[in-house]
Image (cartoon, rainbow, N blue to C red; front, side, top):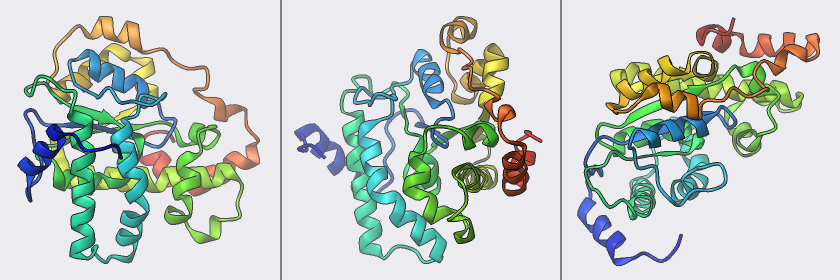
Length: 272
């Protein structure tokens, strides 16, 4: 992390021991990598949401990403064990997050401007973020797990697969492990969002966004209380990629294995 500026220090002192909240409710975009979060980030930005300026090539928020890289394994292991982090470690995590958030928000000039971030891995820490940020709204983007199984974006699988999927799948082919991770994390986030967040949780299928962009942009903006011209934004920002439906040309035996592993989630999210 870069040196802490005076403004960041002031923000950290201000939040103290309470959950940080500045102005409108924050908006967080999470997903498995390669789901199309970049287009959703642009839709939010066109609606007036401050999404940060320290972004990587994929438009992910760099400061939030650094925090996630440091803490996702620790958090996942704690959840799996069913044992909360020790108080000192939990406080360290909380302070690290608010420092990252302060860096992310530092260039935001209008304190009343809606804010948020796009970092797909935020999906792994959804309960944590929900506790930390008053009124947080989570936009869960999901894409057909069979397409995701053949994605070249395997960062989450490489970094967190061993922590999230069944040990007996460790030696399986990459597409099988990919859909196992896709199934596990998306259902986990959906369970939490539906049970604990209610109207602060919105799930959008990438395929629906591509097929009916104006309707889905309106849906996203209603969810976040944004204003603008959804027709113009949909036309400018939503371009369906050729990779939609790539699973259909794959080996039938592999597809049968994918349906066996991921069938429950595929049915839940309307893909079967």
